[in-house]
Amino acid sequence: MEAKEILRKQFREDRKALGETERRIRSEKIASQSLLFLKAQKGVRHIHLFFPIKKLYEIDTLVVLPSLFDAGYQVYGSVTDRRARTLRTVKINKETVFIEDLMGIPVPEDPVYVSNECIDLVFVPLLGVDAKGNRLGYGMGFYDRFFGELRPEVLKVGLSFFREAKSIPVAKHDVPLDACVFPDKNVIFNRTIVK
Image 1 (cartoon, helix red, strand yellow):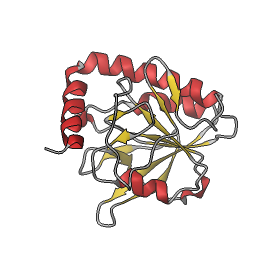
Image 2: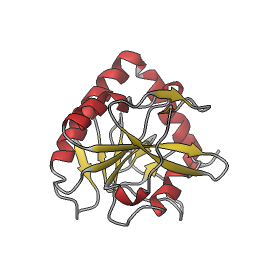
Image 3: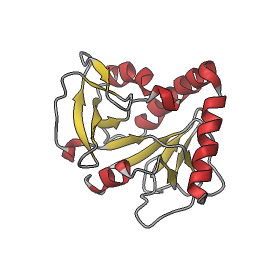
Image 4: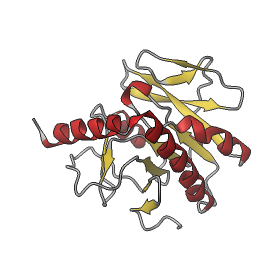
């Protein structure tokens, strides 16, 4: 088994082993840390947020939505276009009703598709991240391709249940993160970001 697959398997097992209560607690802490991180990013108003796949025990990003709206951020999400192997950006607001797609991803019932041009920051799902900002995803490349469609200055910020791994293997197409939010801290990898 290749190194990335071994790491993916381990991170999945670790995430599942946390249990529902601990995942909820860590998700809430990550939501709080995300808001602290955003306060330091004065130019960021348009945020792309991933929504959790329950069966994969992902961070529950839905808990941060009310706070983002209350703070005046415009929030976007994605609808996965599996045929084109891309993410299509959709606008999210307080009235958005979510349904689960075939993968179990919450998506707007009536999606309003918009251009990626407005996005300032993307909160990115991951299985693991290392101290250099190398992200381990699910291996399908959706986010790496999505990053290529964004303006170069868009911040790519991971959300992680776990501390940085020692090292994540990197392929030519992998895009490193600018920062990552953990339950107890924020780590900036790209030093041009304001802290």
